[in-house]
Length: 188
Image (cartoon, rainbow, N blue to C red; front, side, top):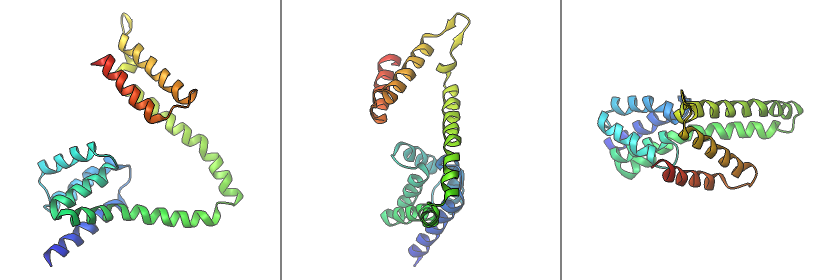
C-alpha cells in the first residue's frame, strides 16, 4: 500500500509540475527540485546528478529528470508513473486546443490571425538567434588589432552553414554534424 501511495504522490507531483510550469524544461528544474527534495526522493547531490544525466539524454530535460527520479525512487514503474504525470497535462491541453482548432480553422478570422502571426514568430526566432550569437564571445571577438581569427572562422562557418541549408537544401542535422566536425578540426 505504501508503494501505491508513493506512486500516487509521484504522479500528482509531476502532473502538477507539467500543468503549471511554463518556460521550457530548464525553467522547470527548480520546481522539480523543490518537489523531489520536499518529498525526500533524492538528495541535492543525487538531483544534480539527475540533471546532468537528463541533459545528456535525448528529449525534454524536465521529462528526463522525472523519469530518472521515478526510476531511482520506485524502479521502472516509478519512471513510467513520473513520465506520465509530467507529459499528461501537455497531451490533454494539446488535445483540447486541437479539438477547438479543428472546429474553427476554416474561419476567415483564424486564417487572418495565423497570417499575422507568421512575421511575429519569424522575428522572435531571429531575435533569439541574434541573442544566442551575441552570447558567443567568438561573434564579438573584435580586438584592438582588428577582428580575431576565431571570429572570422565563426562568421565563415555561420555563412557556410546558412548557405548549405538555404541554397543547397542540406538537412539541418547533417549541417550540425559537419559543423561539429569542423569545430573539432579547427578549435581542438
